[in-house]
Amino acid sequence: MSDAGDTLRSSSDQTAKSLSAATGGPLRVLGRANSFNVRKVLWVCDEIGIPFVREDFGRGFKPTNTAEFLKLNLTGQVPVVIDGTRVMRESNTIVRYLAAKHRATDLYPEDFGGRQAIEQWMDWVAYDVTHALRGAFLGGQLKEAPYDHPWYVEQGQKELIHVIGLLNGHLAAHGPYMMGNHFTIADIPMGLVVNRWFMLSGLVRPHYAAVAAYYELMTERPGFREHGRNGLP
Image 1 (spheres, helix red, strand yellow):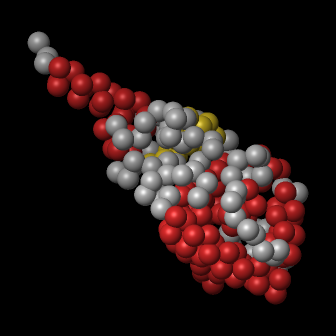
Image 2 (image 1 turned 180 degrees about the vertical axis):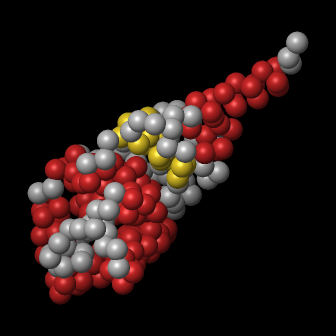
Image 3 (image 1 turned 90 degrees about the horizontal axis):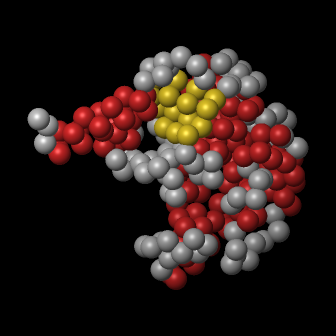
């Protein structure tokens, strides 16, 4: 006989295997469609034409703190992307991987200098802009603790106005896209940031003309309309 613990471990192992077992077929994206970071992956798949299937995990859906999910991503966050036997986390690196694997050199060039110029903007979003959004969005709009302290919300809003101002200056001088005259994967996280900027409540937004023009330019892309400017912040 098996005790309850053995049964639970066996069930968890089977579930973990089922999550990562499929080695053929389309790309698998584990994560809720309203997640900022999942949307990056879905958008790049649409840009490149990569078939994928998506499964709901995360807030309001299947949990990400189970033993089986943590075997796929020790941080317990979405997205997790499964490409054959490769299991991946961290949305920006997944976007870069997919563009490189599928040789989408118009989005992500092969030369190291071109890649570095793109990646510095993606990493800026991942740290500086995301840090500001913790107060401005998680605290100010979603009212999530501990980010909802009034001081932290105010600081986040001030910081967000500052970083979007920097973005506006860059686009005014070097746009209309992040890398000049053509769309690249640098525009994927940045486009989602700009969408969130315009959807934030309780924020007195300065008029940044280049950012506003960029938002409309992004909206011309079907992938952005589907996964970016789709009514979700």
